[in-house]
Length: 315
Ligand code: SF4
Ligand code: SF4
Image (cartoon, rainbow, N blue to C red):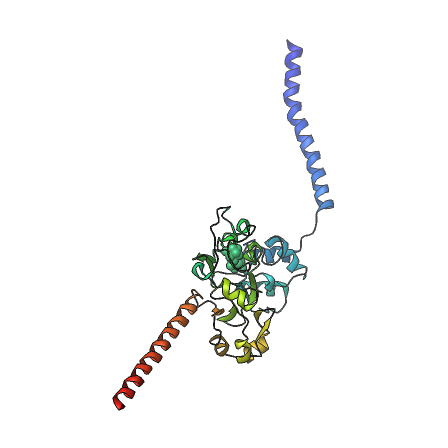
């Protein structure tokens, strides 16, 4: 019994000691490994990362904020490439990097289609997958092969809830939109672009049709018919190319021409629309034009009636 008890006692003493020794050896090994293998992290990466909003939206063209912080710290990307960055955070990062904070006009999503459901012609019933991607694979769902399909893939892709589908057409909230570009990639029709908001509101072409005027008229009530009236009113800014109106957004040209209203009011189909933070729904501009047209027609009819009555009285 005695040798067994002795053995047990020595086991009790030796096990903690053995563990302690093993622990110490591993601690020393890990400390040496840590010092030998450690990668120096630029403290500016951490500081920049902390100043970023952390949205991980990909709008900067990097997979996430961590990678973007590294790119900024290594001077591979300018801080302003983060589309979600506010002025204060931009200045903070510029201070960390010791550079000037230069903010360009922010980019925002523009939908190049302005037709609500009742303005699109030749629509047929679609029973497939309830996505624009699925609908886009089916021929003949609507006469215009360029226009919006209205099932909201763009709205689903927006991480900032900046798009609402109203009567089959996306409406961008220009306060909420950060210009991350997720909607651009989500639209199977390719009708969303990011535009620099060099003005607010900004005039945009709410159409993508490359069809000739006759075909566009047959497929949509508010499509661009390439009449060129806008270009005649403001040749510095507007031009017709490939049967579609285009706008020169070069700040010097666009700003120099100032008020674009002269061209907008000439557009017979109201496919030139203003978008921006103060415009809730650009489609209201179509309704306003219709009201103006109706008022003009009523005034003309009243004048004719008056003239006829006067002629009658004279006779
Ligand atoms: S609408 Fe949404 S998804 Fe599109 S650019 Fe703006 S924030 Fe990004
Ligand atoms: S803009 Fe494109 S993604 Fe958005 S609803 Fe229209 S077709 Fe679909």
